[in-house]
Structure formats: C-alpha cells, structure tokens
Length: 172
Image 1 (tube, rainbow, N blue to C red):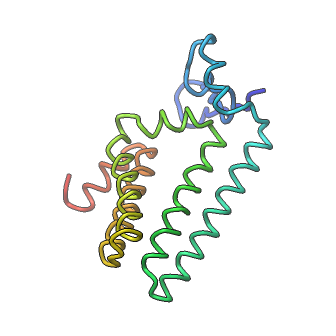
Image 2 (cartoon, rainbow, N blue to C red):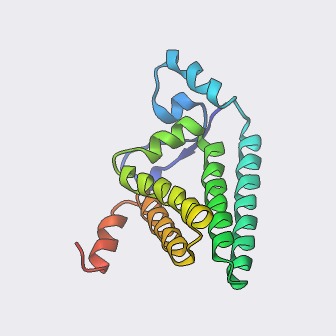
C-alpha cells in the first residue's frame, strides 16, 4: 500500500506525490525492475519505516550528544569519530523512508553529486586524521568540511536555496 500526499497548494495542477511507497513509485522504475530494488530493502509497512527512521535518527542524535561531551573534555579525536558515526547513522535513517536505492540515487543526482562526494571523502579523512595521524586541528577541519558538505547537500532539496546562499555570501 502506498501512502500519497495531495500537494494542490504547491502546484497549479493537481499532483499526487508518493510519501512512502514501493521503489517503483519513488524512482519511476518499470514494473519489471521493481523486484530487483525491493530485494535490497524488503517491503516494510509505513509504521515500520517510521520506526526504523526514528530509531536511527535517535541513535544519531544520541551519538551526537556523546560527541559533544567528548569535545568539552578536549578529546577532539574521539569527538570526530563519534560525530562521523552520528552523521552516518542519521543519513542512514532516511533510507528507511524512501529505501536505500532511492536515497542513493538522490544522493548521487547531478545537483548533489559534488556535495555527496565531498561529504564521503571528508568522513573518510576524518577517520584518517583522528585515528591514524591523531592531529586534532586536522581532525576538526575535516569535521567542519563534513558540516559544510552536509549543509550544501540539504540545501539542494530546497528550490533556489543554493542560489540564495551564494548571493548572501556575495559569491553569486
């Protein structure tokens, strides 16, 4: 069963947008390809998807609190590692709502590709800076790059947000 939302007020014409549904609703896949994506994420009820999302997001928030406690103890490397785990858990939570393949397709869409790549690279560099090199200032820089990349990624879902931010910063 697919839950749909009527978004008349947003558009001139009536559109029904799937809130949560099968992968084929979200991705526009032909019916023959639907089974392939469903095998990657078993069909979950709306309630199960919301519970999975809430649990992962809650864990991400909890990890974030632990990360900030460690930064107040001036343990920057622990902060960076736990903060990165928090970010991965939070991003993973959204996969419950739309499915992993749909989320990955959205993440690697041309509008989000650069932000996604920078985000993943900065997470890897955060682990390397914190666990291999153990250089606190480099670790903090990679965490800041993570935040900027995630912010840019999130703004890509808001129409004209990138343009507005660039204008506010005097870059566009």
